[in-house]
Structure formats: C-alpha cells, structure tokens
Amino acid sequence: MFDNLVTYHIHKRDPLSANDALAYQYVLAGNGVFVRAETRFFTALLRVTACTVRGLPPLRPQFQLLVPRIPARLLDAVLADARRARRPDNGLNEVLYQFHHHGRAVQVKKPAQHTTPTSVATDVTTAVADAASIICDLHSHGNMRAFFSQTDNADEQGARLYAVIGRLDSEPEMRLRVGLYGYWLALPLTAVFTNNGPCKDLYKEKQDDN
Image 1 (cartoon, rainbow, N blue to C red):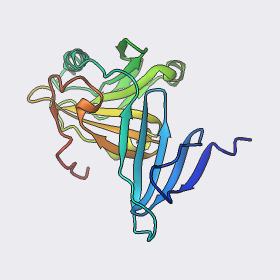
Image 2: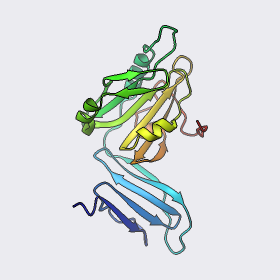
Image 3: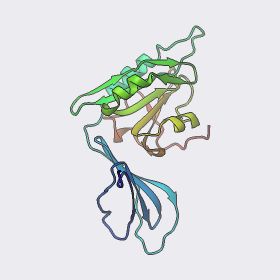
Image 4: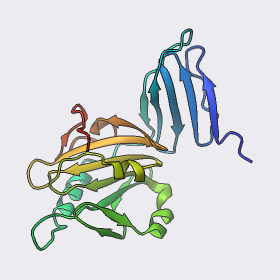
C-alpha cells in the first residue's frame, strides 16, 4: 500500500539526492550504510554500519534542527522537579519529561507515569494523544550517571530526540541523542538547546557499557 514507506538509495554522486521515503531511507555510500529521515522538527542522517564500497563517495552523519532551539531555562525547571522525586530513604526515582514544540513556543510536560529508582513507565493513551508535538523525551537517572541503558535502547525506537540527566544532587550531567527507529547519533546539547543550562554536557565523553 505504501511502497515508499521505507526506500533504498545508492549514493553515486554528490550532493545526496532528495529523500523519497515516507518514514526512512537506507543509503549505501562509500564508507558505509546510512539511514535518514525527516520530521517536522529535524532532518538526520546516521551511519548504521561502516564498510568500504569502492567507487561511491562517502557521507558524514548529519543533524539539522528545523525549529527554534529549546530554551535552556526549561532544563532548570526539569532539574528542580526531578530533585523532588524523593523516596523515604532520600533516594530519587526516575522521572520522564516531554518537550512539546509548538513553533515559537516550547512546553515541557510530565506525563502520567509510574516511577521507581531504576525505571519509569508512562500511560500509553496519554503518550499517543500528545505524540505529534513531542520533539524530545528526557528522563532522569537520579544520582546515577547519565547514560542510555539497554532498556532505553529498547524503548527509544521512534524518530525523536532523547536525553538523559543524572547526578542530580552533585554535578548534574546530561546526554542527548537523535533517534531514527532504533539507530542513534549522539549530539551536543547546544544542537537542540540554547545552552547547557545547569548540566555538564557529556557529548565528548564516551559512554561506558552498562
């Protein structure tokens, strides 16, 4: 029914031709296989796997934000709220926040959710109802380091921006990535936010396996 939902392209010459896929497109280039997609908020080109294909020009991963960046002051609000997710032992539960982009205005919401020290689950009905305006999902890790877990990888399967914030009570730190249907590319915070806000940006630090 939708033959162009996912398409396939061989990159024979620069510049890269227009994307004709409704969802995403795989691109074979001289230095590997890439995937690309466009949403109302961004365009992205991510490398899926590296390999050498003789005779084809190479490509580089790309990300372009199509809307104004998210005000960093919203990160201050997120940090303050996440620090209030206290348990009786003074530990912190994880919390999920969603940034809704409405063109000129950005709103951060905390959807209905069930939280524990190591997980957060949202109400599916609420998530679907608001999905069209969500540009970024951000969840907290309490006082653990900011890293994307295997659970995060399994959950974060959309075309969306994803962030995690950790070490809330000491030196808050944050990671950001763009996701395309199970593939991800790490981004500096300032690719999406106006500045780092209260957080240390871990973009240049390799994530430990967790």
